[in-house]
Picture 1 (tube, helix red, strand yellow):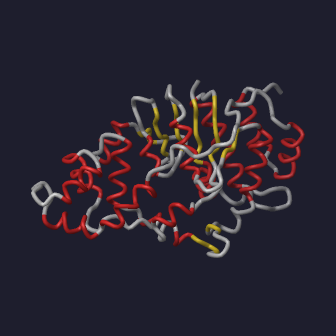
Picture 2 (cartoon, helix red, strand yellow; picture 1 turned 45 degrees about the horizontal axis):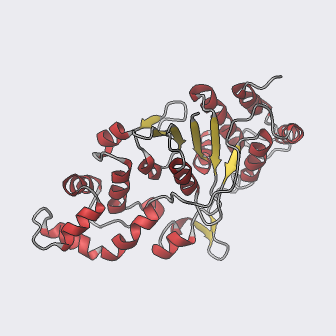
Amino acid sequence: MSLMLLDTASLYFRAYFGVPDSLRSPQGEPVNAVRGLLDTIAWLITEHGPDRMVACWDDDWRPAFRVTAIPSYKAHRVADEAAGTEEIPDTLAPQVPVIAEVLAAIGIARVGVPGYEADDVIGTLTAREPAGGVDIVTGDRDLFQLVDDDAAVRVLYPARGVRDPDVIDQAKLAERYAVPTGQAYADMATLRGDPSDGLPGVPGIGEKTAAKLLERYGDLAGILRARDDAADKGLTATQRKRLLEAAAYLEVAPLVVQVAREAPLPEFDDKLPAAPADPGALTALTARWGLQSSVKRVHDALGWAS
């Protein structure tokens, strides 16, 4: 049975910015993110036909274990330091709890874990799927690290939109980033860094250099062994110097960059619902927020009886 994992925040942010905010509830509140996400879910079910689906959730968008390792992690996106809240558009924030309520009423599993990001939920669910067959839908390149042809794990990356995603498998990683596996992508990302997440990387070691070093030494651990071996001639003097200067960062960065594979997930049912989980709540939410057309699309995609 095929499993589809949604990086939910990535998708509702994309919907918010991609769908006109002229879409309003009967009371005049914006519902573009809600409707855009529901339309996305309906299309994914219709187009890809998964048997199971999980809307993976950021219970903690900036986990303490990552901030402890690298204090700059997502620091530029903090709206309120004391509350630890993320900067989010004023007209999107009220839509997020509506999304959660509608998913619950439909019966699509929504799973988050205190102290972990949605990425970690996705990593854990992927690791639990021994037979493979997982499609991860995300606009976040960090999750390319989970790509694994042997386990049939791929990423649907909506570079041009959800309806025309890049299908990221190992061949695509090799073509685009010159790395052979998802783990190699994580090692490359550690070296490269990511300003959007506040990860400095190794100054002077960009994507292409990182890929060449990984090709030569196999993995990040091999590169670090070469760095510490004065007899190794595969690194230039400048590369060795840069890697040595970044030693403190490289010691902790893998913990931050790599998604968790053993997050303590709650029990849940990931099968797509044969009928609404809470028909009364779904009817009320649909009327309250003016979601008739989008809920109808989900209804039809799931094959519910009228």
